[in-house]
Image (cartoon, rainbow over all chains, first blue to last red; front, side, top):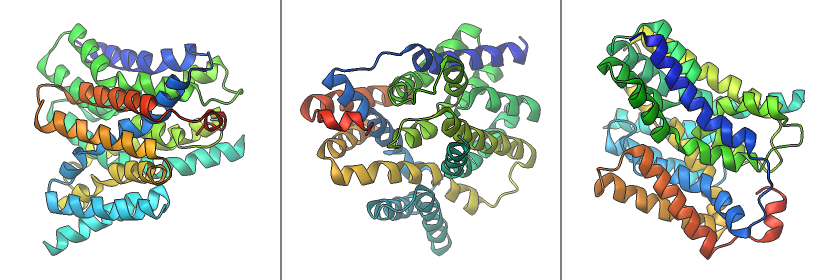
Length: 99
Length: 235
């Protein structure tokens, strides 16, 4: 089968998954439960995607843990996203040099 | 309008940097599975998703069926529906149907996360700016990975693997300090994710994220309902 057909199906399905709820859901939700649910969803998704995947993100547990700790501390002090993201990487890189 | 575009673009920069490193890996993977640089880049441009693309390339390489391709994409990417639904509640009035059709293309984990953290309603220009910068990173990284392979030193590319997760942490931690509910929900989702990773390993990552997020958020909504005035300002 041609690669183009695969890519078409892959891209089409992925687009529809995003487009249908984004475009056709127009009602303002008023239920307190659902509003709270949607308020919490981003944090739940991000936490589930980060833990434990972050510990395997560098291919070495010690460098990943160093990066995680630095990110947690920097985030606690509410530094900008880019600073936290690069700070975590830098910490992992430097830890890798020391090890 | 222009201000929103620039703001979106600047908020897209950390996403772009993270994408560069992740899609670099995708480029290498796609070439190793027998795709050329053009197809690898086209897949990145049309899909804008990491796990789904990796699974898709595996199916292409294995000569799988189109139904299998569709089902795998639905499973891995279903979380985007939840994100799209959540974002649909935060859109500015200027977000007309054509804008929704266009901007929905760019709802990724990271773009969703940054958009969801905004205090003001989302405008099309803001989302377009962010999607543009992020897509440049995603496709650019794929091209470089497909062409350059292993040119980047290992120590650098592996450290870059942390960029996106560092950004996630920066989004989750500050509200955890202020809201007990966010802290509880985040902790619960992390604990459930650990269980899926180490104990219930049969469940695929795509499903595991959905189950963790829905269960933790539903429990949070039940135990820590958000106060009515909070909803008004979109927090």
